[in-house]
Length: 260
Image (cartoon, rainbow, N blue to C red; front, top):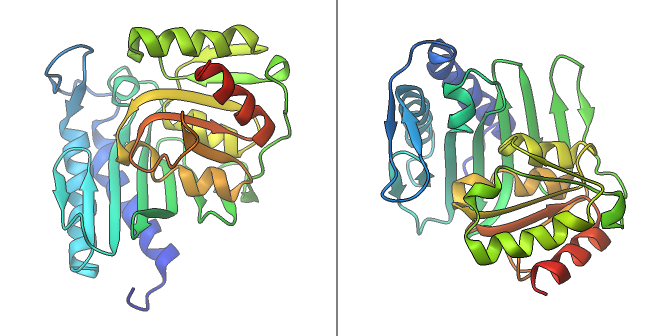
């Protein structure tokens, strides 16, 4: 990678995308439906504007890098360095005026997530991580992110975006974990993962994720001391069925139930 201030560049991406997205928030914005089948899958001009802004900055600064984006697909996906972009993770919350959404910016080197940011510009929060450490910046002031110990499902706070997103066999597996958890809540999208890194949520279980949904969050959770895998215990970098936990014993217990 060219010698640049990488953290400053990711901050620039976040700031520029926020300037493109925020004018649309809590307005009478038009909404298109991307679904080919199944659940409503909204996209707005805010999603498109945010991604175009980030793509242009990346291409100008790192023309040899690849980009995997939520709205405009893949460019140079076989490059050594590949960015993943989700301008609004949580578009359903965005169009409802609820600030449980964020801009996800991730970077992979040879297929491995190495850096990630979740930016919530309306609230003014940035969560970042490189797999070795994770940081928060926001209204409460900067601080390190650290997961909390929680080895038992009976003590765990469990989140998923919505059980409506699970296919029937996966929903049955999720329910096995949910029945053992102390508290189960729905919603949050990318925010739930950041709350795992912040030590406020213990485990997130999802299915049907794309790479741009999870790649930016992996270095944040791992940097805070947590673990993110697929349901088989392998890499979650390609999305699909994902488990993110703050405690490795909790993660192991959840995998056993999911694969029971």
